[in-house]
Each structure stands twice: as structure tokens, then as C-alpha cells.
Image (cartoon, rainbow, N blue to C red; front, side, top):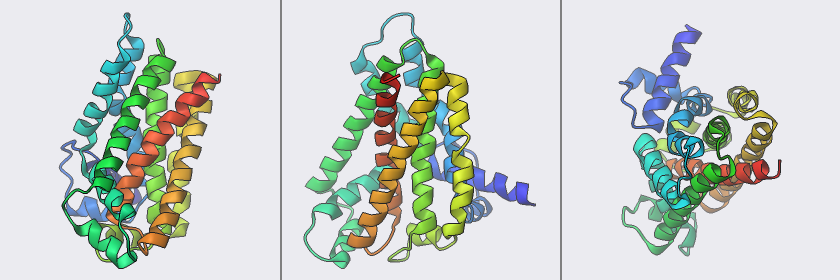
Length: 267
């Protein structure tokens, strides 16, 4: 029964976090809502797919231009995972620059129009992903395993940071945020940690000691982003929303990739 629930939660997470047609239904969604550990777990499945452009560039017998990787990586990422989380970045960018109290910021979150703050936030995230993809391919050239390890680590750590918000946060209003946070609590963090932990030995297998250092750096960086997002959401919005969760995933992924590249180059 436990295994069946875990499989359903994983299938629900894949359907929620990507555009992969897994045929998830209402039962899978309900199982996913009760198991935030499914978020980092799905990173192990999505990570290798997301890494394909970077791995191809790192393993290519000829040097692939950095600009090519910079375009291919975020474009491919959007094809695999969709743009739902990026929409959260746009909404939070608009809410971050508006003047007023939490109610005013929450009203801006619900506004479908894109403002200057949202446009700037999306641009920064896309540029961050593009430069991160190029940096991974350049720093880990000729090591397809190392490149894959770092991208997988970033995907797992980003979704682990989001899962931590689900466990610790409370929603300020009804919506996706409340649908997820209402089913979990701090005790669920243990399951999230167990789901994230295998990223370190996996990185050691694929990328050696440099891969381990890069993965640890990615995990720490994503965790910091998660903590900052949690603190900002509580102070400025009164709680965690679906937009906060989506934006945390995007920001944590980009930050984790850059931190991992820096750690790798120090080896």
C-alpha cells in the first residue's frame, strides 16, 4: 500500500512538474499532495532529460560555442518542464516592486498582466539559466557524466528547496499553495531530506570528487534560496502561494547551477 502510494505520488509529481505525458489522474494528484518528498524525487527523473543539451556539448568531439548552449539549455528546459514555474517568477517580480501591504501584493499576484518587475525577473532567470548551461558545458568539458551530475543535482536541490517550503509554509489564501502546504508539516522534512541525499553519492559516481563538491555547493545554494523565499513570502505576502513555490524552483535551480560550476572549477 505504501509503495503504491509512493508510485502514485511520483507519477503525480511528474505530471505536475513537467510536460511528460504520464497520464496522471486525480488519485495521483492527491497522493502527490500528501508526499512533498516526491518533488525532489522527480528531479532524478527530470534531471537527465534537462541535462541533454549540456551533456551533448560537454561530450562533443568539437567545441560547441557557448552561445549555442546558452540558447539550447533554457529552451530545452522549457520544453521538458513547461513554463508554469516561470509564470510564478513573473508574478512575484511584479508583487516585489509594488507599494503597499500584503493584501495589495497578493492582488498583484492574481493580476494576469505582466509589469516591469515581472519582465525583469523573468529576464534575469532566463539569462541565469542560459549562462549556467554554457558555464556547465565549458567547465566540465569532455566529462558528460560530470555535466549530468551537476544538472541533476541542481534539479533535485531546487525541487527539494520547494518541498521544504511546502513543509514549513502556510498559505495566506486558497489556491495551489494551500492545496500543497495544507497536507504537510515540518515532520515531512525528514522524507524530503531522504529524497535529496542520494544526489551526493550519485554525483560521486558520475563526476568523482569534483562532482561531490559541486553537488554539495548546489544543495547549499538551493537551500539558501529556499530560506530567503520562505522569509520573504511570510513577511511580504503573509504566507506561501503557488507562485512562491514556482518561483523558488526556478531561482533555486539557476543559483544551484552557478554555485555548482564555481565549486567544480575550484577542484
